[in-house]
Image 1 (tube, helix red, strand yellow):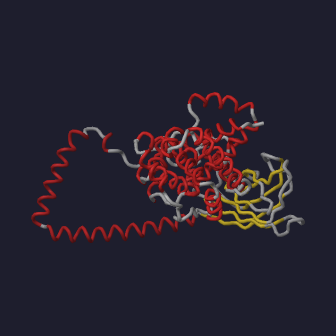
Image 2 (image 1 turned 180 degrees about the vertical axis):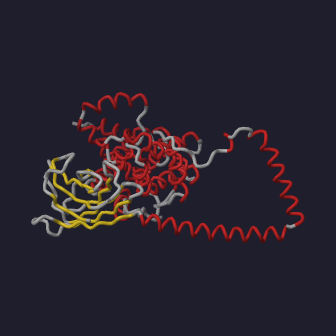
Image 3 (image 1 turned 120 degrees about the vertical axis):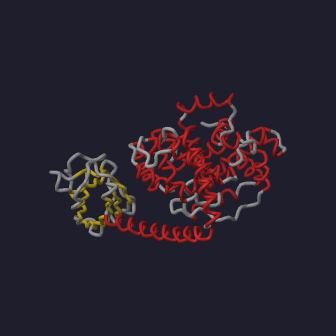
Length: 185
Length: 254
């Protein structure tokens, strides 16, 4: 995710704004795997994840001009789009609590890491290590929010902790994560 | 200065956890609070990197073509296949056609089941073979549309600078891969030019910078349609580029 990649991505988005189909196809090749993986992780359903991926790429095609460079890199923008769409779908399907319980009970994943060339194994390993460094209760609270789409009170209920404790855990966890990843990516 | 409450709100905000009652107030602060904006940006990036912890799953191969077809439809490109539902009289003849198909199928399966099955198997084999041949031909044709040029340095201070450009005539775009070119000061850019004898002047193909190691992979699309991709050159120009090359030429290839 270095600056060179971000620069290429910004150029591709500019070309997509100009209705360049080839640039769009390149952008798809670069990020479809990581975005699809995020959607599958949230929805636990490949068919639904495909629908989300299609929505995300159609939005990129139609609204690439909405990307604001000062708010982050293009890949961050697309990950946020994907996560938001997957969470919306999850919330409407009433499966959230069941999936959140599955998430909370999960052990550390040892599944294959992303190896798309854009998001390489080394960086993915670094992020996993950073997350592993977080205390379990912080990791759980953040994970339930990010992948489970639960609200503050739902997380509090799910982990059987007061709301104030959950907020403080999320704050400490996010600041720690930022510190661990700072300069690394 | 960011207090604990704002840190907490920022953390909840990037995870989409900030309740409606606090959301508007928090977002109102962002434009006038540079430190808070920066914190949100960093926290958002950190949260997004959580995506990297997910196992890699490649989407179905046909999803890309479905998405490309969807954008073509949205862009108003004509469909290659006319949907049945739009054809006039569909609702009238379709049930009769379906019934006729069933009748034929039933008759065939009754009298010539084995022979039809064999024919279908042979036809499948033929179709598969034809598809392979077609794919090979398309691939061959695709490569015939490509043009590769090696660009060498014209600079005394960067004699090792080298670049390769790959040009796709059909798509009218290309990629330039550069190595060992000297990084430029912030007020300058490298500009790529394509030389086509159809035009009096080289055609602008965009500006780029190299990284600290002198490398870049630059995807380009000339401003004008290119018929004869004869030469390709890189010049050093002011930031943002110029309509006609005025700066020193640094790389040239054909």
